[in-house]
Image (cartoon, rainbow, N blue to C red; front, side):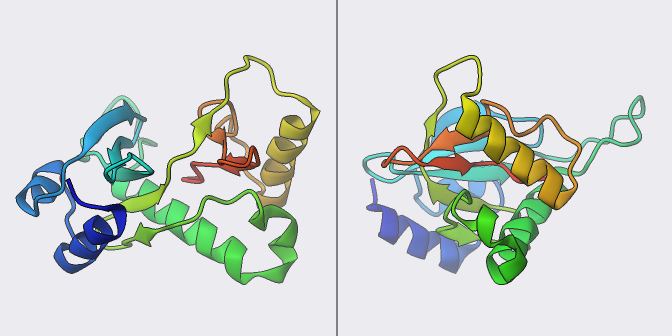
Length: 164
């Protein structure tokens, strides 16, 4: 198994878009979870990072609003980059995931591994962060819940999925 930086260097050079392409490059991934739009895998010898890979797009005739997973991934990358580059979002920056690699072309995102929330209910700080993101970004979504709000190694809140 490769160290994290070697794996990222291989990914940058190969620009894989599917699990099979990662395997062809010799990158070993361990499945963590599946979301609506992406598969999530551990990366690195000590599983210190996660790779989000967009699922294949299969339009749902019953739901014309169903989004293409690649569009969802691109939206997350663009949202993180927009917040990072705009000083009017200073209050949100500290809650963003660190992107170790991102590709608008493939929708693949690599970020550090964050710890999931263990409680069922938000505490006051978590409710405030969730409300701050929704109100600042004008997002009317339930996505800022325990599945997408995590903690870094120091215990700080991180919104690990900003795909809308």
